[in-house]
Image (tube, rainbow, N blue to C red; front, top):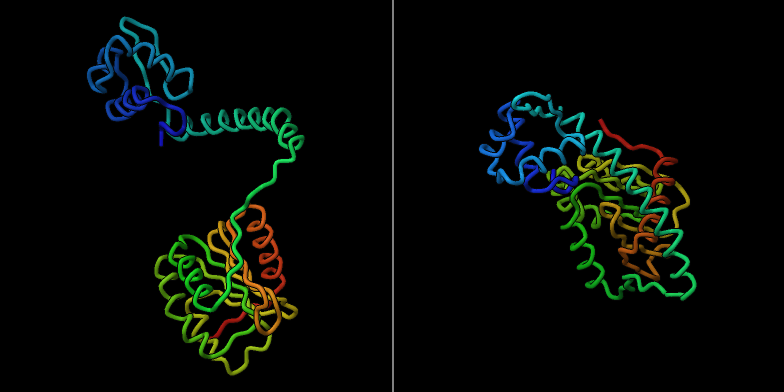
Length: 243
């Protein structure tokens, strides 16, 4: 992770040596970190410029590690400034080239047909869920609840946040069981439904009682739109809980 933040292999080893052993002279850092002595001053000077260590002049000079929290904050600010520069350059210089050539996107979007294909894709999505699962299901039946319960239980055991949005009419569906493994809310006026996994892919079911069109996509724009719409519905829905 330190290298992903911008430190070289030598810098990472030198910083960790200082963290483990405290203030050291350059020769000691070289010895304990296995950084060649011919590279140690270059390495330490670079670490100091990047804000990970500080030095105290003397004979010999001593090098001190900065607090990881302090160094991380400095690295974060530097990365944000760098990102802003990249963003400005790319949008100002490269986006016009893209727009001029009228390059058409080829997003990964599938239209799914057949119950088997739809269920297979849904199972694949649920297996990959790591953080959050959003489900909008206007129509729920007892058989569907019974089939979904084990899957949702498995996700809760993996600490996946499960959010289930259903239509207002939930009487006599045995919804109490589902509230044990998912946060459940109800609302009126839901056209179609869908499943969104980790904000990365979406399965959209369009239509009233029976889906007339089922679409899967991991296109970032489409998935974001679906997630934003789900969150709007969720925030204006009624919470269900059973004692």
